[in-house]
Length: 236
Ligand code: IPE
Ligand code: IPE
Ligand code: MG
Image 1 (cartoon, rainbow, N blue to C red):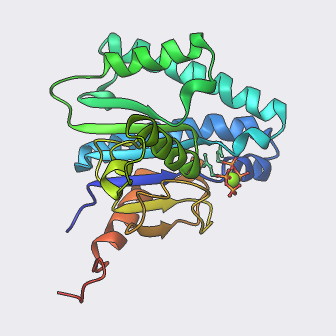
Image 2: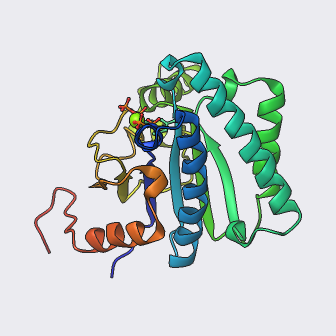
């Protein structure tokens, strides 16, 4: 069975999961964070080398302040807890996992930024088996524009090419995603990995993200293994 090297996850449906239960949306996000840990573990154990999870988009700032505050507080708690678990060696889930944050992090306070950077440093290990990207304040268009601007500043007057853009994206060092999984039955990218997903396979799962179990991931992987990837060529 062919396994994707890199999977992108659009974790959608936390709000509807909560609404269906008659509880505040923030409880949907809390449940989503629990589901995330189980999926990271499954990715690692089946041998996925790169996984990128879309946690907060550049467009999500348009949500009500109360929800943004809840999401940022969840992010802070999640990071602190990860740091504690990893440094105490308590969490097997993150063994040999390198964590990177992708997105425009310049909007965050120094305090939050230091926490994010220190978790990245803590997990920067030579024995890395899986790279885990967490996308926060991430937007595909913003990513491309900032890559182009950096190139222009470094190389005034020089024509840009695809390689120069790719190497300046937040995901530098990762191959393009082979598979993009979106939950909650939605079928759109919502500004996720626009450049990198040129030839990705898409998979839409009808379950809300908090209900996306390792078994659901196995079903998606099975569907992926039956796809024929041609990259513009004829089927081999
Ligand atoms: C995904 O769940 C989490 C984030 C975008 C942060 P949603 O909050 O978008 O859930 P729905 O789409 O409203 O159900
Ligand atoms: C995409 O989900 C962003 C994340 C999963 C972080 P949204 O729920 O924000 O996307 P739209 O608004 O339905 O397209
Ligand atoms: Mg949504």
